[in-house]
Image (tube, rainbow, N blue to C red):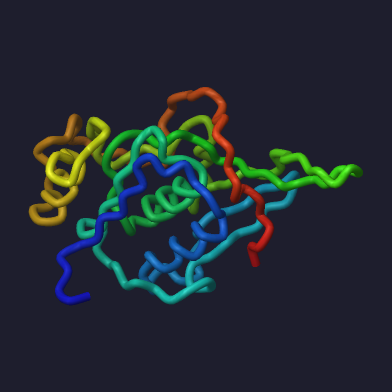
Length: 204
């Protein structure tokens, strides 16, 4: 609003969280033109459940991917990858930075007799095009080196995103060829950081 020239969503160092939160955020960021299209799919055993745009919240109304940039790096994982993969696959946003971590599975809590519980990995998430990013990661449209910690006055990736929104190009890109697939063929070690929102509980 107020004549904003573009939107930058910074998901660097974002290890994920609530899957329901990712669902609501991604729906909010999608334009009305993608309503009813698949946002992501949840595959559990032999069953696949599709979650679609236009069901969980009002749309922000972004229609030009050259004006919407998502920043990501190797610590962007889990729920943040849900948002990145969906908005990239449907051409809603342009991804910049490094390949994401590659955690495309989630857990359910199984209660034990003593009142405790254990997290069991029980489902996999798929992008709108049916791609799994687990152990692969989501690839950026523009691969740019990210040096952390960045500061508000010294953040080359942020400056590249601003440059892209203003000019439509990125002079700092390490590659000028845009990628066309959500996953990169790069294996990563298993994700070990706790993910407190991996359960599908609360999804409608």
